[in-house]
Length: 369
Image (cartoon, rainbow, N blue to C red; front, side, top):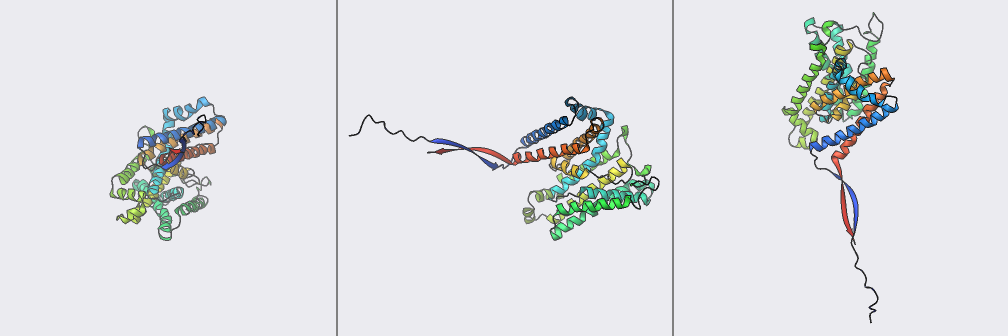
């Protein structure tokens, strides 16, 4: 007989186990993307502010240095626009090359050759004085295109990685620049390593209110690039190439021609940036005018996500950082490397935001008997 006093066995209960899996997002709406990028940018700025405070900058002065004195002061705002003009150009150059999946790290080398071409027109008195600036502009554009042609052909013909070739060509351009300013192009009056000064008709003029024409030129180039990528047939092809070059070629898109045209236009914009710095800011060819612009161009293109309009906005913000950084150097003895560190921190934070844009964590509940 069964012992009625013995308890019956209890039914086995299902246990819920929770775990998480990482999934690739199919698509994320633009407002959410903007929110994620904004949060990453705020995180980068917070980390940068903590570093600057630890370096000796009073916390109460950070907002004053980076916003009030930079934007609301008329002279400093002119300096921001003055600094932003060539940055917009190198940012646009990076945007175009990256859209064509050509990782152009040779922006500084293309700037150098653009400045050399413009300076050659001035030194050798090429053309009448009334056409001197357009000729300098054209020479800078042509030299930027020609310097970009070498790594482009190496990639298309010999499959040489453009990251290596464009980066190495920067050193060749920089050393050739030193050869010129320490050699035959050295100013004979001062005996310093820079060229003779440009004459008044070879300098970018000032417009109303003392603002440089360089900013107007940058705005026109931005509109040109915006039309190219957003309206023209080549821009439509470029979107196919950016999405998937193999599929683009399979559906009849002239992938090679699109890449060649876009990358050469990128080199032209970088060459024009060299013309802007020499004919606008420096007034002559100097040995270090290009330093920092290559990294800034890549930073601007990355933060703008290869969008021409966003590129202009980001370039203005980076220029504000540069102008405020110079103020910190003077009043708080902060080295310029600290400003570059802030840039790097912001890049890392925004780069990390791309992970959250493309992926998501999903919780999975599974029953265990």
